[in-house]
Image 1: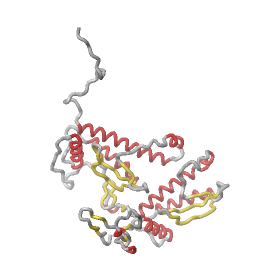
Image 2: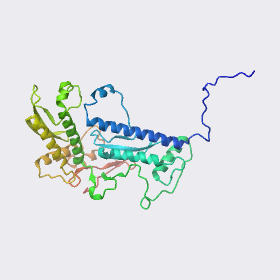
Image 3: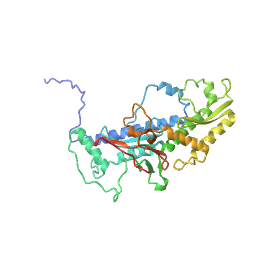
Image 4: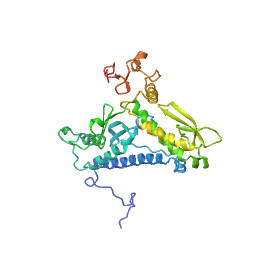
Length: 348
């Protein structure tokens, strides 16, 4: 009698070499999973900002449970723009930097479409990004890399991984919009977006202030509105309204009634939205104060992290200068290969 031995795997068998999915197909599946996850995290963040108090209990419950999106990260602490990564086989293939928040979802959807259209059986290796993805898989799995004649991007239209959103020399081009629509992300534009984010938060907070006070959540919530405060400790009828820009208090009005406070906040939002960041009206006294605040905020300063004194402004012995044309600080850079500091271009 033949003795039967127990199968340690319970009768489960792996796929044969012929039927098993290829490493490139596996990487495509993982890329799609991660881009969906990155989109979900972005959408959750945007939805949470629409009603900051509705899910207050959920936020407390989720404290400590942080999610990390692999396809995007904030460009800096201002959180007004994002770096977006083309990710494949656990590595970043290339990055689109400094994309404004308004365009992030479109770029992520563009990435998802790009991943979806890649053939895992016969990938189009004449596409430069698909070739990079293929060779990244080959590198991770010890396979032979491919060298292919790439498509000429001028003569042949190729699939854009980022959905048509491009960045050239700090200028944003949105889905083929003509050049007269381009927006230079200068210092004024950065602070405008930041100021509008704060104002939207202040308006949402103000509209729910009675409910917040009833639930005694005012002291619990970490983030407080910057654009208004109570005039009196014992009254919720009068408010001081503040115009903040570039981290600096520009102007305030005091002891405003509750009804007029909201009008003032909405008017302030409309005023900031009307500022032309590419050609600000410096004859307006308020705009002039805001302009100078941005100029000072981004001025290169002496800190322990400043490695090259050439990055300081000209008036402090460096080479950086403020451009009255593009309204930003123009700085040089250090060339590590040649071990020299490259001076900034003039008249930018």
